[in-house]
Length: 383
Picture 1: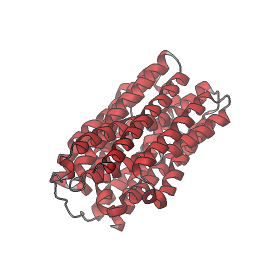
Picture 2: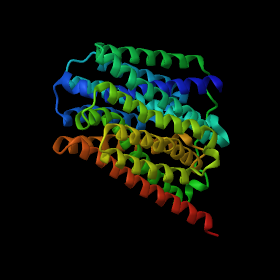
Picture 3: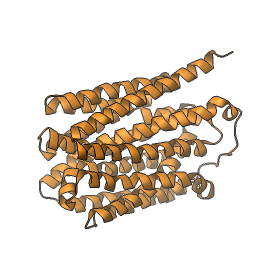
Picture 4: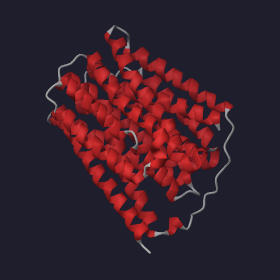
């Protein structure tokens, strides 16, 4: 168990580091490929498309190969896509590399979360927050380091190749971990209740909005700060690191507190906090206040993903791979649609309006989380 938890933590940390690379260096990539913002958004959107396709196939892959093998191979394919991105010569080839990385990421995320749910027992929300904390650690460390390195003259291509190679090494390390006991896949009595059919759809929609906005803000924050707030690339990189720092700090706290707070209440409060903070970041008159508001937005986003996955696991405890794949499929759809719409809005209007769109989508997520809470409260009161 310890080996699996440690490797899962390292895997999500590597994912966090790799996922923040395009956003951290987006101003550099736009210039290097000589592309418009909507083309940059389209290039990055190929990753969530690949992610969604592999998520849809992940349940069958886990049934045939086991969650450990799917986690390992998925992470390896993801790493190969990141390395390939560092070697491409144009944005279309970059889109293909992003698609490959998305294929690996989707399979790894479903399988990895399935493993953690199985290992966590009654406190799986705490363990999920622990493992996903390292996604935030990788995310917060990378922007400040790579933006400084590139500003000092390092090649952005070398950055992608080196980080991707390190991720591949973690993927190969999974061979040293034994497979966990296989779970039985059969429907529970709760799964036959009407609310159990409604709630997965609602949770998947919440997760879709969350992933679309959380990764979208991470992907466009440096561009927003450089273009709209006229700051240097290192300053923007620090702001992005601070955003991920907020997310990491929240997950660190929730390792100890998640079991004391109802998951549904936590999602509502977290989404509301992020909505307010992101709106402030857009409206802030100066770069320092905007950076601070982005940090608070990251803090708000911290508990949403683990809490939603934990709620899904309780809905269908006998078949966590199935419910996890449904929820993460919703995440994949949101990861495609929301950032692409934002890139089109930014290209037609401005990046500031695009960021305001993200704030509005976070508000919609808050409303859906409140609806989920209302359904659960009504069900508990029902005789």
